[in-house]
Image (cartoon, rainbow, N blue to C red; front, side):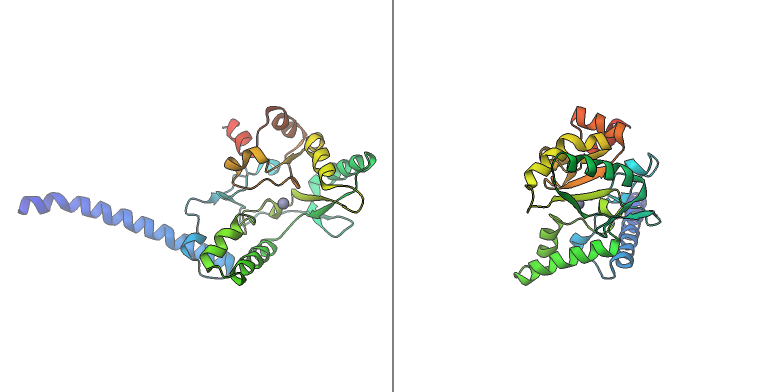
Length: 238
Ligand SMILES: [Zn+2]
């Protein structure tokens, strides 16, 4: 009997240590959630596996999604567009050229949304959650539904300033015409359709024919030719 308990002891210590590490990790995750969101999380709010995005491949290749969040110290220099939306100054010349050429092709389009702060993103998320709560869903259900359409603060490409939502001026031309032109031409200016219909399993985001993200002309061309989404392209670099 004595021998038995002795043999068990080291295992107990290991289990306790593992539990302590897991608990500590959860406390840190919860703490950072409270700091960034200003409220205590419910269990489904925390992605325990989320890491900070890798910036070593260059500003144009930062992968941000539900698993990789924007580094807290990320800074961006912005240029304001004529309608008040802002974008990272480094993508402005190519964006302008793309719009000039699309307009020359007879399209009427505009940047519906460019740069967003983490606070903007949180406001959008909160608004969506409230809509679902007003419809009678519980907080966790409402959050889950909202997340199907809205990225969590810290995980939206709009917070990088290198993504834009492009819409048609539908009084002058159709959305389809704009989306089709972009799908066929945006890569020439370094932009990719970030959430294609046939890649939703990988990106985790529904088809968004309006959301374009800058990666640079060479990368965009390769992605277009090989039909890769950004997650897949980044994987080829490893
Ligand atoms: Zn977008």
